[in-house]
Length: 297
Image (cartoon, rainbow, N blue to C red; front, side):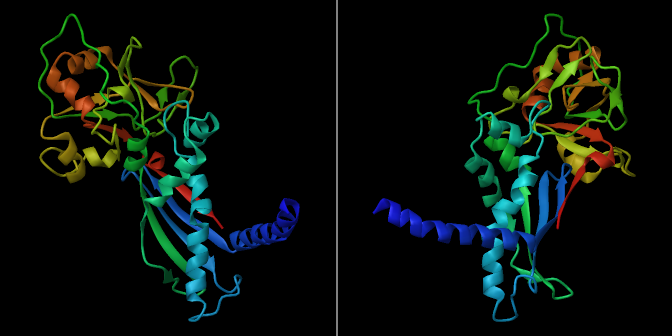
């Protein structure tokens, strides 16, 4: 009985796989992973003619196809998100630290627009927005934050309202004879020039979803009293500390190295250490690093 049932199932399964592959060839995705807004913004398109769909009667079928294929099409963009200097999401899955179902689940919470037709009426489309904060929050596993490094010889330090680290130009990579541009990620570490670890993800407050915020260079050269864009001023406050990064670290150069004296100003007071725990850190990067194109047709 089992063999007969399985024998009847095989043709149905083969038909399903062929149909899924056929629909995949008629669908595409465009968009960007945006590190400044911390969002994946994508549009999935279904070619109506290639899928054999005629409007208006075939529209419900087109919407059903997009919904059924959405997670599969979005999967490569999610898997490619850089988590830290050594891992992207796909590395966590390969190591068993994250299940494939959990990774696919990041797409489920997307904000979705109602399906709409392209201006040329050739495609049925849906737009999606996935918050990177929701992903980083799901990857924070500690219940209480670890201690941020302190110093036995604190110095007098102003009470800053935020920390701005400028890393918009190529920087030397520690331990390598080359320079590179910083690669944004969910959890960049911060080191000082003596290679003491100043900040990493386990030091974040559990309620803090965003470890750092990335922003373009022009956001700190605005025509305003503070020189900051409204978005950066809202996070960094009226008295931010401005630091020039001295180098990068990591197999993927995501981690920042700051001058030891700058690090000392941060760790010398509880008020400034709290800025790290609360995610009030802005990293200024080259504009080209802020957007990663998603394009598969």
